[in-house]
Length: 254
Image 1 (cartoon, rainbow, N blue to C red):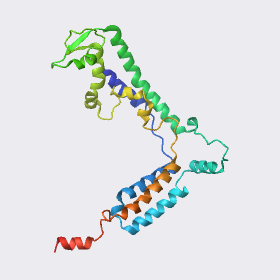
Image 2: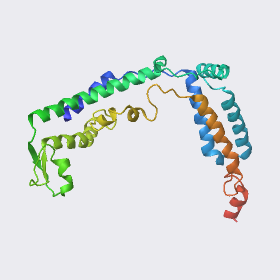
Image 3: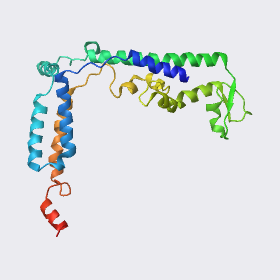
Image 4: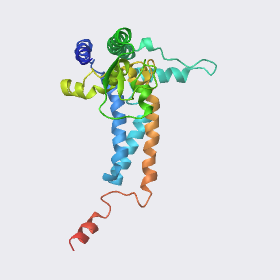
């Protein structure tokens, strides 16, 4: 299983595609969200006048679509021209090259992860069904019997004895430290990721394949979040770090 993991890691490095450079328009519409979020997180270190200027700027550019890419702007215009009785435009995942590339990458990763483990588990099941391999050097309770003695139907055997199939699963989830020692932290040999490969939502996060990111809605939501800066500034317990700094410095060295 260790050798298969090393082979799988090397195979993933060979199959991994080079990242494509992002377009300038796509970077701009993402970076403006990062800049606006940085203002929300650190506005207390800026003077109130500077915060007001930046908040007005971000509110304007996030609402009028200045930083949206041409495709997003065109989609907004089509949505405005859409008649009330017409159906809203649906996103076709096959029209987005980024989505297709992501789906192909995850398909290759899932195949490289699942095929070797399926073959090994089938080999263990076929040749070693009912075999007892090792005895653990510490006692365990009866609750571990189902986990450690798979394919062995007996009540009298001590829980410390481990069957072949159970030993396979223990190695599947327990060799991560060995792989990190041999291959480093960022390796593709860990078998515990095979279960995640069966669920595309876990591999790709909350975004499912074909679900395009609506940056126009993200910009509008970020603009609304910036309005909360003014509400928080009215709180007497939330104020600029430089407010009254002269009096505080003089009080420290009086």
